[in-house]
Image (cartoon, rainbow, N blue to C red; front, side, top):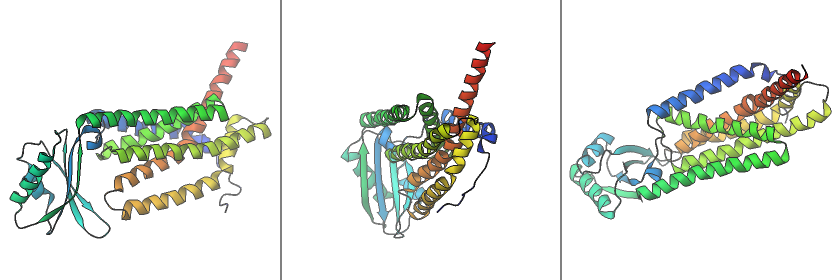
Length: 306
């Protein structure tokens, strides 16, 4: 199925406006990260205790917060988790807390005493020490850097270094946009979100490789044309594939985001933001980098001749 058979849009005409918009979004995200003191790490990376409770009768987050506020574990983060079956659980999290079985028993005893006559089941208990959380954070960063380095090497071998540099810059754009929007929205960065970021990197580079491959083919066929025109033609030739592929991905992610429940909502949101940013960056980050770099090289060559 080809929706845009004879497409002839001048995508690169507004490349500098598009790049300015990206810069503004990334800057807003970085400012948010600075004001918040860095990413809002979950207990996966900070360490702490997470207890998920299911009450027999409805209960508010305020009641649960009041119940655990006086047990000396610090400020609690209370969340309501809704599931597909209609059940609603309460998630209690204490970050940077010394982990032990006694701590969990303290939480259960405090809730039982403060909310009598409303039995509850402990659905899940997660305990992570601060040292393990720190190690996980370091490994998550290392995994992301290894993925980017591997992509840089792969694209350099398959195409050339300039193409790989443009692709990796686009991937940095996608990750920074996703992290920035998560910071603005006050969302937590957990191991699940790191998995989403690595998925975004793989998804985005796939779209970029398809267009770069067409650019490489057209560089041989259209030797007399300017690079900007060749890249525009390549984007238009792959436009139908890009729209169809990304539309199906967006539909699936929207369904997961709306109907998947609270547990995977942030994961779905990260993929939604990242997949959109990845499609955008292929056209308006990776491709313009090739054009701007080539224009810079031509200017330097003219100066040398003079």
